Length: 481
Image 1: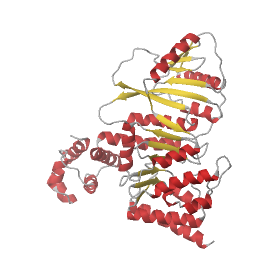
Image 2: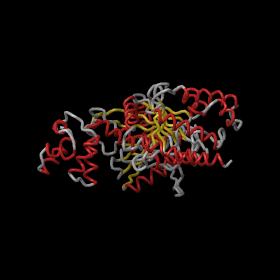
Image 3: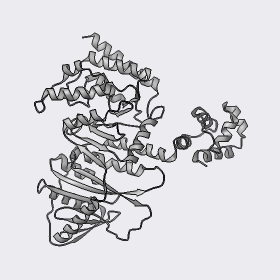
Image 4: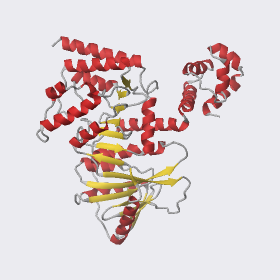
């Protein structure tokens, strides 16, 4: 019996009402409610709403009731994955790529091992060791196998943002679970994606499988390896032992390399702007395309005339090369004739209407669009959304927020990409992060497919109304020229 049918059964038992009486009151079929109580039928959303109203559920009770309904509708594993991906985007929207102003005390190796106790002291020592090691040169490699609760993303990001050049290899344990629930691994991406983007490919996350229930008798099973230090860590991060003996560091480093050769690399990064553009072009699927970006994905409306009109170069890349790559990219998008999903926010749409800035384009190559071209883009988008050629979805910020520094899209092989926009620290196209792990890609695809008609986006008629308001605003601006 599902959680939804169990909850519904409790409502009937608590009220003392018969199924027939409730069905008459809400205008539903008695047999459909009977079958819903045994998981033989899925009730229409309208009936579920009516039941919530009839039983006078509180706000908390309604939320629980509809949550169980969605779990039954999608399947519990799919629902967990959907919530994890929603949490992922909301978390990424809060990431700020700004270095800390707090001074770090640098340490240097000593000849003795030492014990550190207390979470604050452990974290302080780790921060100092990382700062000292990355200040010593450009070929520094840091290797980590961290306890689940220890997130060093901020410390590493700050070092990369202040110009330190180093490599990080991190090992993750991904427990084997029954079914299709990969929510834990999706939450793992909350730290992996920002580090991959800000490092521009010098962060490499590897993972291995381990069955739940495996017992570990070593109290300091986790560790960080640097050229001059080995830091052993406890699961709860309350204690650490710091070693400086070269032979021990070398032994752990060799063992770590042995593990990496037997693990899977979770991501693949590209940092060349031409490579990023080429990957984007090659990845375009003529049958189904998904784009999640603060702004609508207007690429299908970019014509060769517009490329010639706006394209610039800063001299680092020949204009002819940029034109050729850009023309292939937008030509591929124009060929998508169905299932063109573009998920965006009201904030991003308004930014485009007011400024003409396309945040997925480097401003040094593509300046803001003029109002009349903005109007053409918005009018074409509105028409194709109404006819169903384009599935344009505007997110509800109370449920789903999109980071302004990156876009996510699905390539022709079903792999997930995260690309930076011009609001990122290093600008647009500075990094393309590709995840090809099948079970994760499948979860993201299910999430994208579930967005239409979900509570996370506005209904189609509301989205069209928002576009109409933008079109009227642009018409006024164009008329004043």
